[in-house]
Image (cartoon, rainbow, N blue to C red; front, side, top):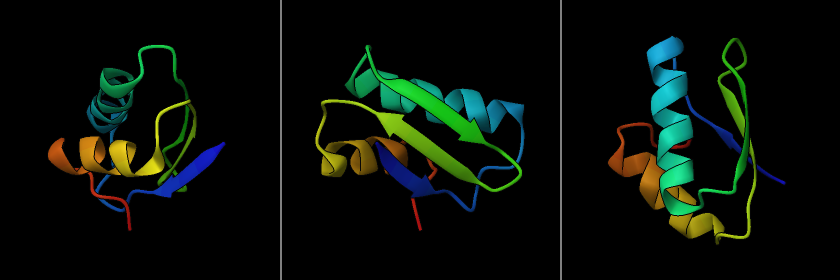
Length: 63
């Protein structure tokens, strides 16, 4: 499981955008979002660097 802190995530739209960014890299990825904690947990076979790049491109760079 890979965990990211995403300070820019603040609403339901953000949750959808983050989930879609991760699943754009790995459609089979399991994504758990804790909006209040601004954390995302991802279970994926994709490399962490690839997920970071997708999140950053979507405007939600991990801290």
